[in-house]
Length: 189
Length: 201
Image 1 (cartoon, rainbow over the protein chains, first blue to last red):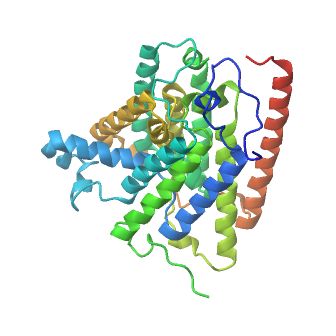
Image 2 (cartoon, one colour; image 1 turned 180 degrees about the vertical axis):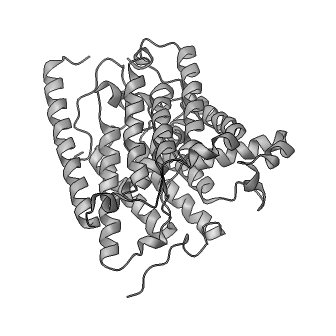
Image 3 (cartoon, each protein chain N blue to C red; image 1 turned 90 degrees about the horizontal axis):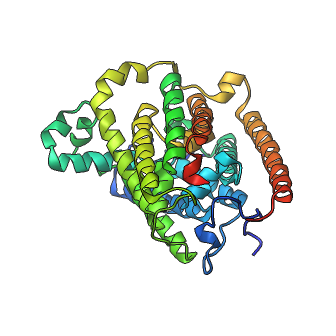
């Protein structure tokens, strides 16, 4: 197929799911980029807002916390306002997040790329990988509230709108990742 | 010609129709992320070890495509940019948050959007990452009042690259596309030289 990636299989990190027999190869990144860009454009023109992901986790975790400590959550200066107009889940990014999961599931299923397990480099233990996934998640979650968005809402959406702060975010994002990459190389290589 | 009103500009994002369309947009978003192979944390982090540049290629191509389309439609008078939600710039929280998110990306292997796709692909580490994201957000809520001041620092209002550089949106699209093409060419040259230098594992 002409739309399959032409890149050589990367070295020193073991085969990916797409390299496993029976799974389809992933598509060319430029083709996917155009598809993703048209999705973002549709979001702009129809919704009047771009893509977002961390907002749905924020709403979901507030909803979950509310089950256990309703008063504390409603009294919280950040989470409380989400409950003033009913459920915090009645929010466009929550539905976009559910759609993202469903879209990923559909695509992964169609390409036979669903592989239950813990993905890690050949030298990393499952425990190390899961501990680092949790730590990375904690940092990303906290930072997503400071920056008011994540890779989707800031880098992709704000980037396409040419927002100055989003381009600063984009540069800082890659800077932070490259700085930390050396320290966690055992996790991936 | 009538400018298209968006759901946001009409205050309809929270209506059942708005939520349903958001779900459909998400469906396409997740599909494309998975098609790129972003249901794999190793592929996502490969860029930081110079093994695969799909993250950069996909993101930059998407930014060029969407901005060219949007500013093109705006120039034709079909879309009013002001009907689209645009976040104001708060430079310091965006730089600090971006750097920590980038660190969390390479340590955790995911960002929130790709973790949804990873979870859909059966990855337990994506689930753990998402639990961490939720925990990090709840932790933030405990410090919110202390961070309000920092989060409002570096306030530049609604600031855009065209304004900043004194360029028209059209020229900016062209300039960003030109930078993207140079980067893509450099990636292609680098990958060719690397695959020639190293035997396949």
